[in-house]
Length: 188
Ligand SMILES: C[S@@+](CC[C@H](N)C(=O)[O-])C[C@H]1O[C@@H](n2cnc3c(N)ncnc32)[C@H](O)[C@@H]1O
Image (cartoon, rainbow, N blue to C red; front, side):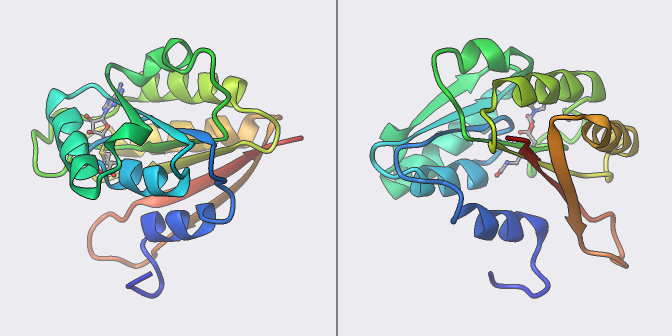
């Protein structure tokens, strides 16, 4: 980790290194520019699989380029789709980790963001398709128009969910809105 205290994404990658095994199937439900997908593709090894989803073609292209540059494209399946279809997209697999990184695609149109209804729907389905001890990680970002509402709704949803153990991590006292990480394990 380069910064200390670490950015939530760096902390998440650090923590997941011990929890992802070679051969696992994992899901990046918001591929964006592919940083998380690339990390996951490294962690699952040659026999593993990453399923990455994004509604923007630009995000899929960006994620593919990043994987190509690292020679890891063969480990990933990229879906230009909404994560509300996560059950159908993941059908026939048992994902051990599902990541959401909410907000807009950095460097692109900031009016295209994740939205509360779709995020809640996809997160609810994710809890159902994860196996016991599976991990759900959600990076929330309040710095977009509906970001406060979305972050609050998602936090309340996981907090009330009987099948999850939850924690929240993030920088405090920052000048601009800072993302925070919700880290959840499905109860055995
Ligand atoms: C903050 S970015 C993700 C960053 C990414 N994890 C990375 O490592 O670069 C959020 C992404 O969510 C995508 N998104 C918004 N709504 C979505 C939906 N319903 N289904 C899938 N992706 C969605 C956006 O297009 C955007 O690329």
